[in-house]
Image (tube, rainbow, N blue to C red; front, side, top):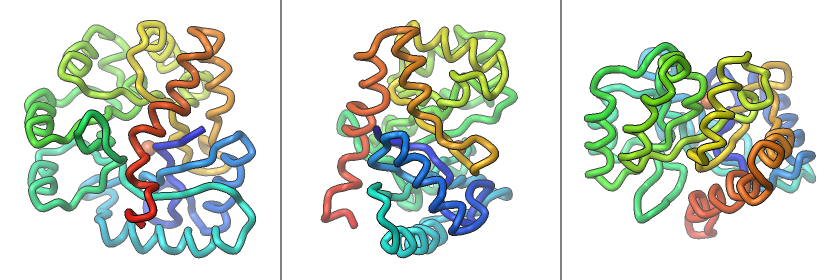
Amino acid sequence: MIDLHCHILPNIDDGAKSIDEAISLVALAADQGVSRMVATPHIHLGIYDNNLQSINVAYRVLCEALALTSIDVQVRAAAEVRISPEIMQFIELQQLPFLGCYQQKDVLLLELPSSHIPSGTDKLINWLLAKDVLPMIAHPERNRELQTHPDRIKPFVQSGCLLQLTAASLIGDMGPSPQQLSEYLLKKKLYSIVASDCHSLNRRPPKIALAYDAITTLVDEDYAYLLTNATPYSISNSLFEPSSL
Ligand SMILES: [Fe+2]
């Protein structure tokens, strides 16, 4: 399986607090059958002011520590980018990392606030698509406006955005509302991938294997395989080519 949303870079956001915890998270993912992970630390202006350089420094720290272990997981780095008008400037300056490439577009993991869908979101998405950037909406099931108005997901889907399910939402770790919306969106087959969004050993550890079983029960095993293997593989494959190191 492949995990395209996880906070395993140490001391760079609210994810792993030490290199030991980062290694433990990767080991836990490996135990579940995860073979590739793309670390996605927050880029959230004023909260987590990460950039390509800070992410690369933390990524190198993790790679060096992983090389001293026998854990058989390939790791790369991108980011989870909080929606803001400044994204346009960062894209123009080529200052945002992508999850990979899909449908001839660069895939950007885009985070909405948990409370609502900001006005102007549709315009930003259209602007990104015109720049050949394909937004992947991180865990839409955790957005409270979407929880009360699930139909408001339609413009995202119709514009071509990808949707990422967080495993913990489906399993019920985040409460009943995210679980209900994730089941609703799964039954409509609107998600493109499932990811752990793991942060720490205590707070949201990686649980993709449990999500695989839940998707198999709720929909079928073909869809579970698509969300955990085939589609995340296609999206991130360019990151894992030797030339991209
Ligand atoms: Fe995240």
